Length: 304
Ligand code: SF4
Ligand code: SF4
Image (cartoon, rainbow, N blue to C red; front, side, top):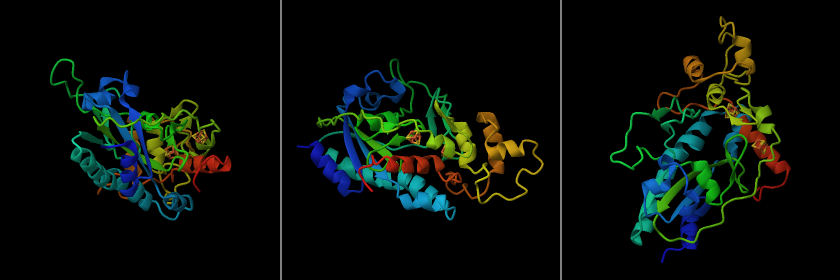
């Protein structure tokens, strides 16, 4: 019989750092387009897995010596390759026991209708405004779970001010995947502690002022993630030389929306993104590094 402990043991063996199980009842009330029960109507639980992003990748960006390795290993490889291999291996365990396993990895450039945000990690996002339900009472495809809420419900961490899940083991340096199943696993407790104390270190660290008390402005973030701020070591002196807003852009004072962000993207071509569609992170994820230092300073991380 499949048990939570067995699933956890296998997950760690196959390369996950964190594993937790959420009772499907915790997703009651979620919009149909985000609800795991729309994916598997007889689902009993959602299993969440976290992979640590090696901190050396962040350290190299902080020291301004390497940026591409974070993007390719810490973002693309984790979301597209490693997580897929991992989930396929986990699915075999569930199917061998006669259960369904609907695998959920982040599809970085897709957004459900009505989600106007941008994922700064990819060249642009696509909002699914044209899809329609195949029959009455069904949500329009694609169903995209809210990964941050799912991680919290699986007991893995809490959503922070900067819009990232903080975990007690690895702070914000974690990426998640999920599996929706009809296996009757014993659920873990949802994560109820609040690790984010609202210190504001992430806000101060962002070169584009993309974070405030209300969270992260993803369009503003997408511009500074691509290196529009002065801290970008690849920026030449003649960058935006004739632009009257140059100083405001470099200092992070200018505010970008979807239109103005898309307008400036072609000029923020400091390192290649064309082969993969993933944008090199030239802000160094300063918000997450500042948060990590803050959490370590408070001594609340259980792993060094
Ligand atoms: S840096 Fe402070 S305010 Fe920002 S997410 Fe971390 S704990 Fe919360
Ligand atoms: S530091 Fe980078 S990733 Fe963080 S909010 Fe600012 S631009 Fe976005």
